[in-house]
Image 1: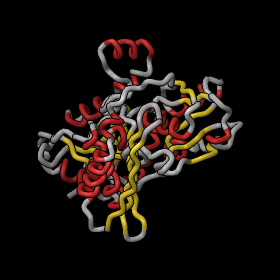
Image 2: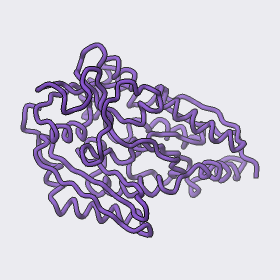
Image 3: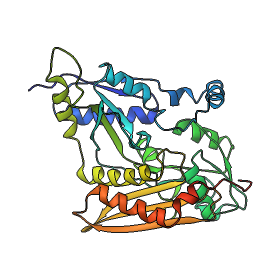
Length: 329
């Protein structure tokens, strides 16, 4: 069965294009013909201050679940593209039955990185220094390490945030290592946080390759098209990465989903075990529930994720997630 031209849909940021071209190169190496189509999403438009004001008035969050993928999934459903390449942490934990997570390629460095020029680690920052981040997870976990820190909301892609930092809007940045590595912008990374210091967002560092579901194929004259594309994409899957992000996303789903939660989860294989780190921190950084659960390799990912979610809940994670921010931070 020959594979038709695979049309990839992606956002237009430098990082998104790097990711799409990276996957395109792998598919071409397997003998497939690939095209890339850039699609502007709601999340991209939210970088415009005027649009952000409208979104705020309507109760939308600029970091809300799914805003970086909606238009891409619309194009996938309409048959305008065949494959969506996402940063996996942008993908909601519940996927429409019209789509499937066809593959998770090998994962990049999932850790968060400390970006600064004059200070070589978080502990070296002067009292009351400012960190640029929009992530409640990073803010809460940074406050747990340094309660004196202040925060500046910096929106935009990696280059935009780096440019704002270089112009003096904040003392340092905390960004995902994976994006900086992929764009070769690592010159000012002076620290990569351990999983116990700042636990990554579920799925951080991983890519999600999303196609139409086998149960909802495109209604065309060629019934072999979608199965052929699914098989081609599935060949790029990494079993260890797929297991890890599945376990992490189970934790996220059990505790409420969404990227506005001060919650981290990271799973990796260590010798003959799976290690799943998970942390929930109150928004003021003063209280935390942190778990490292080790499980045999034969443990199903869903089971491991559920066990860790139950442990977090037993340690008061839901109360921490529902605790309002009461400090000046």
